[in-house]
Image (cartoon, rainbow, N blue to C red; front, side, top):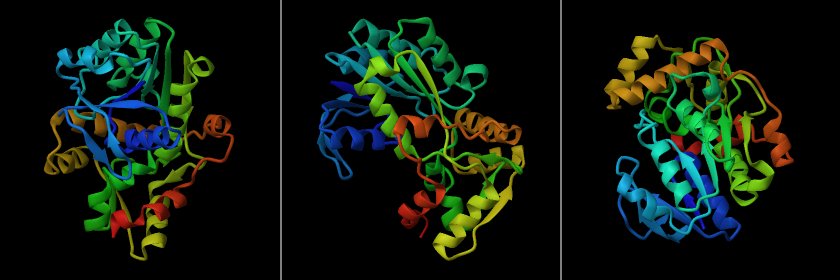
Length: 283
């Protein structure tokens, strides 16, 4: 049995689909306990789970041997939430934790993922850390409203280039690490897409696919934070999201790493593939 956090998010949903495709038993943790159906997934066993309520930790993972761990964007204090959960999972018999971090988190204590990585490395060896760069799925999530309603990409990234990664590819690697832990135990994988693209190039790809002009507007730091505030995001999430985007200006997500192609034994998906497959999100 595998325990899945973040199953309704961009990455978690693809992990669920991949596990179901392979016929693997798994359990989903949700803030509200219910038996529900995820899109295109059919009925899924669901248990009550909340990172802000430690009493839900042990009951959620009883009988599980592996955990897929994602940090919810609103949670910035990972030491009193995710790290406490990791300890509870270990004590309940979990022998493998696959954690989705972010690129550069190992050396950047400003991002919440850093504390989780440090905690895993200081504990038992049953862990695998995935360090993805920026997801293509941000276009259909964090940037979707700007693209669809305002026909623009608005982020404080300047002229940065980003090796955008498709979450579907990361999900495949995560499932590998969940199902074959010995092959991936104690490993940290830096995962990127195959091309380093500027946001202007991303806007051009959207323009070609959608048949309408999408412009890239480089935001100021304060302008972007205010933009997120107007969208109703909590302050902690605004701070994290702004820091991650500003980091792009310094090349934090520019490097193209071949690790993903090696693990998948195929070429990773390109941005044009993602935009084509999900074009309805912006129409």
